[in-house]
Length: 391
Ligand code: SF4
Ligand code: SF4
Image 1 (cartoon, helix red, strand yellow):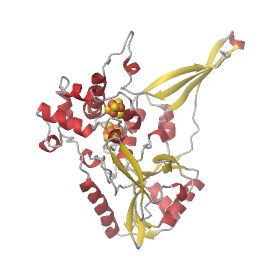
Image 2 (tube, helix red, strand yellow):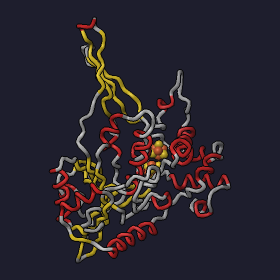
Image 3 (spheres, rainbow, N blue to C red):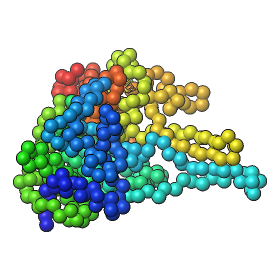
Image 4 (cartoon, rainbow, N blue to C red):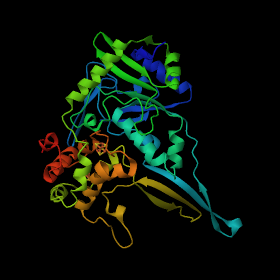
């Protein structure tokens, strides 16, 4: 068979069951109350069937859809970040060893993680996973837990046909259709790529095969074979989604805009609105800052070190001997956006923003990274006309 398959909803259900039979922990989008999050998918009934969303600055609402879409929403409230990089985990455990004179014996926590099938991951979030691979798993000192969880992952991506008002992946070059390969490593980006076709009389998925592992799984489902025409239809859907995005960042100029804006008066403006609540960093699929928290039990015999997500918006985060180096909200916002849109590139060879829009949706003050970047571009004189026109 060729590289295109046509899945029905029943085939998608069979795929989930098949992956679970093969020992995969299937992780994907599911509804929890009034939000879509990433969690374990045990059957097709766990997917958000007939659920859409509306998103805007400081605004997120789920909606009912009458077309039976399974992926008819934009970036879920929570990305796939916690699947490989949980918000809190034990790094080591220690216990007092009375046979060794009361000294502490320390054991590193080792993981026996089942391989993950990442189902329904969006293009922006898939790029964020690639960024985390680079940051956490490809440098001299690897994050052992991340690397263990990430090993053997089967990626079943979903191309986006329904961008939210907050999405700007098209301008960042990260979506709505994922690139076939990781631009840094050249490795295949996905094993299978689904595009949902919401034809009233023929609701189906165009499935493109990205790897041999993906082909093996697709072959096991025995779905129908697709053609180049089906692939063209899938590309039309994502092209239309890209054209509907109204927000953008000019990624050609933004690096230099931030470089020359350290003393911009815009920082006072944004600081007067920012609550330093840390929401933007908690929802961001690329943020990876952590701190450690040591706990012991009441007997004093056992202790644990936990690694927990932290944020550059907290005063404790930059604490160095006697006080924080970034005391003001102005300094913290400047640090965050400058890292995302400029210095990340020096560190990792790419920008640290994938255009998912979550920091816009979940900012209680409605602060919009695209608007701040455009304002800085206009004030510095280095931004593109298109970006500057948005302010
Ligand atoms: S900075 Fe905002 S838009 Fe960019 S990846 Fe993070 S949450 Fe998404
Ligand atoms: S930019 Fe918004 S979400 Fe981020 S810390 Fe400030 S108020 Fe909170």
